Length: 265
Image 1 (cartoon, rainbow, N blue to C red):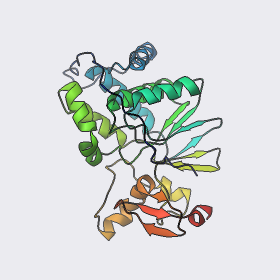
Image 2: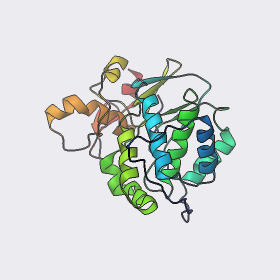
Image 3: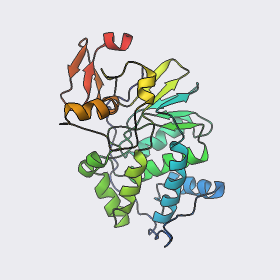
Image 4: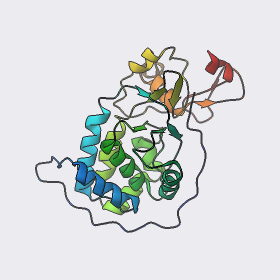
């Protein structure tokens, strides 16, 4: 089983300037990008230049079409490079691509937590989405516990969107898109991968497939009734492995801890 871990990363010293955002068309329907547009977006984003608002809106619309067709348990083929938390560290992401290879040459599985804490969450998410739309079979992007409306209002992504676009529109469109990200992946039908960990309410992969993921991630303080419906989704994104055996209450207030004996089951 893969889970993302909680590793840190170096923080960039300053933000780069971005192009002035444009307005989405009056019809409310952004133009969907073609291959030439996507290649241009990728080239710009690789230089840490954020997209204009209308460009990002079209990219998000196309990404949503792709993601909503993906299962809660996304099949992934080997060879694959598995990547944990990025947290807005764009230059770390670029270094990883430099060492491991750029899509589509390398097949990637990202385990979530693309935003918050770092200075370049917008650029990180935009680049991953551009690669996902351009090469949908060569990159898998799962949801982490920070791909959440509540969490991003506390840990920096919301403020970054306001600072770079002078509007909350970009934050809203991206957090709405996060609802469509798959929850888990299954590598070669043998390695079960997710951002967080296991759940005492999930016994089979079919249990995961039956979760309605298109919603905000439930966090702490939910009633027993609400947990029965939404808790398993929370656990997949919040639970952590632990040196102690069995199930435990997570000190983070959401999800559970679980021992190696639970993983072995």
